[in-house]
Amino acid sequence: MTEKLESVSLHQFFQRFPDEEAARQYFEHNRWAGEVSCPHCGSISVAEIKNHKPMPYRCRDCRKHFSVRTGMVLAESRLPLQKWLMAIHMMTTAPKGIPSTQMARELGVTQRSAWFLAQRIRETWMAGQGGSMGDHVQVDETYVSGREKNKRAKKKLRARRGSVGKTAVVGIHSEIGDVRAAVVEDTKALMLSAFVRENATPGATVVTDTHGGNVGLRGAGFTHIQINHLVGEYVRDMAHTNSIESFWSLLKRRYIGIYHYMSAKHLHRYANKFSFRHNTARAGTRPFIDMAINRMVGKHLTYKGLIHASR
Image (cartoon, rainbow, N blue to C red):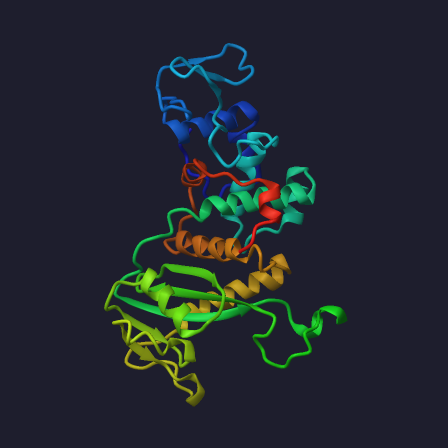
């Protein structure tokens, strides 16, 4: 089965993947394309175990047993592959995303299991996001967190500045419509300049607003165009920051309407997930399941490592 999981209803999903065996075959096809190889040593001299115990395959060279889960982010998961496949399907086809509470109900698992599952899938989407964004980009920053007035009294910072207590996220939008977003420690010139150098072509035209952190871009070798929103300027000779600001608007609508809360510790995964969805949906298609499976290889994320990780 090599079909794309695109705009497929749950009824159609279960018709295609009615049981665990169908899901296993789909994972194996997308990972190995018909030629099973040992994830331990890379050998293709592999024997299939008749009853699939303790695992479906055994390498004749290194003599180790393995399954399609071995060496992937789902290696230590006890959830059936069918539920993994369904979770990936939901996360890549839900237009505005899906909260862990709803995913838990759909999969028949606890909210904690669904949250951990979703974070592991987001972890795989963080791969393959490197490379230049081109010669003409828009760069902007935003701040993500709940409103002070909605916080409990003991958590209020009693500060009047809009960005106090919030997490900074910087984003870059390419001329062809791709977006890349990253959580940053601050929005000072050193940090923003480093982000642009990492993502834009040297000497590229960079369009920003008049935020003070952007002052170092011209000195870094970029052609810097600043749009002054304070005087009502939003477009100058086709240069604008409207596209990246539109992306921030969508991100915050999903924050408020779908997830309600995204901790600073895990915000980088959500930011990457939103940019991944934006980039794959732009051409009118949904991410393919085989892309998600390929990105799972070599990834490892434990629950302990997740909850104790620092951003």
